Image (tube, rainbow, N blue to C red; front, top):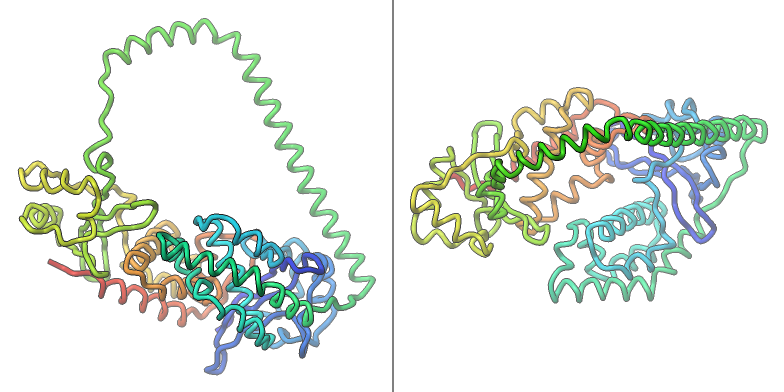
Length: 434
């Protein structure tokens, strides 16, 4: 399985260094992962120009046998610049964990820990494994903020922060030992440095042009302002009269109670259920990790009208009684917003064709649904399968967050299709049809 080779930036004590990472791929029945380096050395470069000069002139390193390597020497310097999603500030981890465990903090820390685990695995750094196994919090990061909520979550985050304060220097020291900055061909470096300078100049020029356009737009608006001022006054007066006559449109019952009807289209069925978010945490109609689903809105409404249907997680929501009251008196209308329609059907086949055959909106919604269900059920396997260190997660991230400077995933996509089918099957097993 040919997989991407990705430019990454590592924030280390010796500075921000650029290198290449090959996430896991399968070849000849075995799974591999690698970084640009040779023997015991992990190569790092001060910028993309040095990296480009190296890959264009040196063919003795650990990535030369990678299935996609032949593409790399032909990349431009901008294409070898790490995007924001692949910049890992390892030095800043103690400062990061001192923050509150919100979505952004936990997400950034999870990405850093994931790449550090990969470095430890590839470079055989036992001390790094020891540090990352010293607190349960390191394993919980992939699940998002949920494990760090409540009293037990605070304890877990505090323990993680203490372990990082005590031992993160051991991680940095271990990496510092294996990282080296190789020399590059001077003539080639002159060329790549010029490429980098030209790219930066073009970027700065583009920013200046955009800034000038913004100023011009403001000036135009100001010049037009006097011309339309009298018309505006008249329109305001007319609008005030119309607003007095118009009734304010209601938000709608479901928006008022903060619960959404959702529709789920699987490979063979069409289901309806309910979901809401409480403190950004998903909650489904159901219990013990099983989602109650129904073949039609009418069947769902009938279920909600039955007495004794309080044994579900949504019953904890303060507005739940409003839902059951309407269901009981027969006035509950269940309509699904298009944004809450999740179609899993056909996605596996589309993924088999690669990025160009997948509808990113459909995929994004499907990932949202499967991730929400797993988070609600406290199942971390989905977050693991969708992490960028896994081939499926890497393909999905490319489709949902396209980047012209990033190497496109290479076919075949059999492993990704198999992994997606397993996720979809596990999700469908979570559905309790009525």
